[in-house]
Image (cartoon, rainbow, N blue to C red; front, side):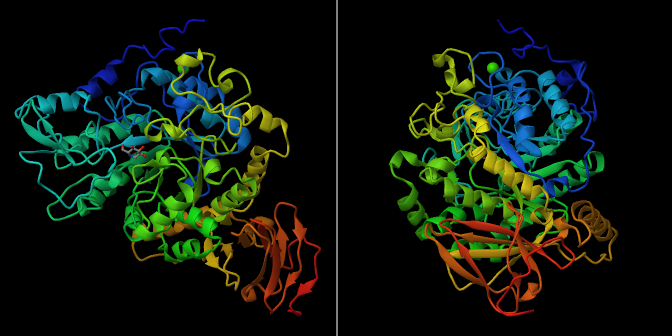
Length: 631
Ligand code: NOJ
Ligand code: CA
């Protein structure tokens, strides 16, 4: 059936949209025919601290109108699946109009939905439906740059005297700010590109078709704050702030993490908090921990930050079969202010970035994980989780056990819950953006369009192709990876300490074993300032909602023991702090021997892991065998 005009996103822009396009942002305007969605009833301050996120490439998720491209209505049709899986918040890759030369991170209009994905109405319907199910939705917001096809840039580049002439960063030569590195080293040789119309160079930290906005210009700040309000008014639950370290430049600096960038984020947070109190700002800042943590400010910048340095170290640790890389980064991760949370991930829509490892570590990762030079992308590896692990299910289970138990809110990349594969012969990062595999039917059940019409070919190889790996088959098989991960998610949900608890590394002589305890944080003392007191009260609120009385199973500490080796390993754990408690294995609720004063022995299978609730005498468990002498 042919798609209607509306399905194809041809809804005429409303007057309010038009007004905003003209650059006036008079606050909370409602779009005609579109009402803001109700927020989930389940809402609570700090919801993101305990949430499991799911990253969706809408284009590749499900095609509702058979044009070969996934869309918002298609995503909405799959909410049953996402609810069944048990995720709390969707993160949508950019949904804005775009020439699509950088997966939509090259925006040509901030105020509507890209036609191939549907309409604003479709987005609102998705939000409504997701919220009804208690699922939140955030999207990407690219603040740093636009597409060179954005009308702002068209005007800015046209001459040196126009109303947008300094909305971008222009210079007469290409020598300024030589200390700023080129991010996309394999495709760009400079951060400056010549513009013949204006006879000047423009600044860009990414592709040359993505000119950086000039945040020194207050009109640009107003315009972007207007964008934020526009989408929050429609009911979005927040943003992933793309490429946020690069908003300002300054002589003699790398142009990253500069004070005015943090100042701007504080302003943004203040405005968001004042008018949209339970929304979330998630920083994409690929930085070292010490710089990264600045994006939380004093709890007054972003609510969340991706923990970039942690991710490659997961892969390093399991390949070395040694805990050191992980234990080190966990120990060196600074404390974050109350109400803040890390976003942790194994894979995403980009390459496995190796920017935040040493050169030696980078060489090691490339030697271990890059079997073919075509797998390298920018400064990283363009592969999905399963192929990186050579399809080893036990190892994948271990990595998810780590992801779901380390401090932070886990972010699952679409398809990785099935152990989908990749196609390294596709250009740029399309290698990891192939269609979601729903069934063994035509095009993997993603679309009923002709194969040739699909935005990218689905995987069809015998190992990872849609006939071998798909949702339908895995839902029917109770032993599938999909069912396993769902069970793990449900288990995690019962223990709020996974979200909000502190982490304490447990000493163990075997270097292949990484053990830690997740336990509630002590209540923060009320600070002298009103702001501190408010945050303290909010933290207590979260702890109250998140944990229960200590006789309650959900309130106990959880001991996580991970075997990073492919062989069985013995471990003797120093659990002196927990003497008298009984470790109860969480997946089977099997009590192990009670903890005594001596080292606690555990035997782990190849790539095995345990999550143990450390039950006290009030918890309803039966095991009373004592290891290492009596308490
Ligand atoms: C970060 C995004 O994750 C990536 O996909 C994009 O290429 C860059 N920002 C530049 O926009
Ligand atoms: Ca479609």
